[in-house]
Image (cartoon, rainbow, N blue to C red; front, side, top):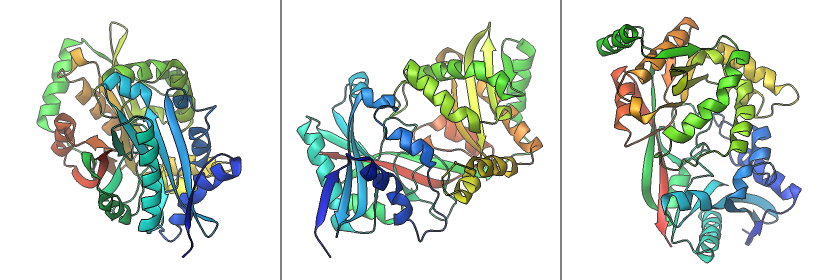
Length: 373
């Protein structure tokens, strides 16, 4: 085999090679789920993605015999480091064939770049925030892949651990049948909430009704996610961009918010599984792929719980149960059959307990790695 060359991504052609390399790497994996490429072009655009304003980044491609065979992104999220008093760099969006020499060349180059910039530890896979795919999947490869999570091949786990990386934190994914009968404790909580009349739950019959709440929800997310590993608060511009990015694919009936005296104190967002539509259009929404995605979302029998949060002073009062039950009832009415938790931090005992209470079980595990430099 020829010599490996590592090159920083500078030109648009190189960026195209970087973005589309994964579909070449996973060509023989029929269950692989491509990203939405329209989002990928914006994610890696230094002018459009405002996260680049507070993070140093380097995009690298590995070539062998003149052909791209691997990629990686190095990040130093200065804003996150300042907020959390850390001195860490990151690697993310790493892809390569099952080739330890290519893997080593890529990760070593990023380690060197991070070290040169004064960092003392590297963690990853971890992007700009926890809203990007995070971790390598380490268990549950027999289950279908889902959006906004890592979709790596099993050999990546061996390759990273051979480089001396160890566990930083694990995330788990729960899957189960939608409950037709809710636990008695839920019924008691709901009855108590209804009796007091202290909290008002708001539901949305249309995107038009939902739109005025999106920025308020993201502001509450900034507050309630502050202690979650990897989370970086969204700036005002990022809130606007985030809302514009996801509003087209959201289904309003699976979004609930709770208010008290006109103050937003809780939110929960579910999303029909879009994976069949994304696979059908190979991640390309234009010109007609978006219609496949929307059509499949209407046919979906799986609900993915994407986001949720409650103001700290109102936790333990049944607000999460109230929103969760409403979403599950609407999912059952829509003839959905299964519930997917998305990613849950392994130490989030309360959330894990709620999924287990309704009969879900862990089917996938993802790991963020670390290494001292």
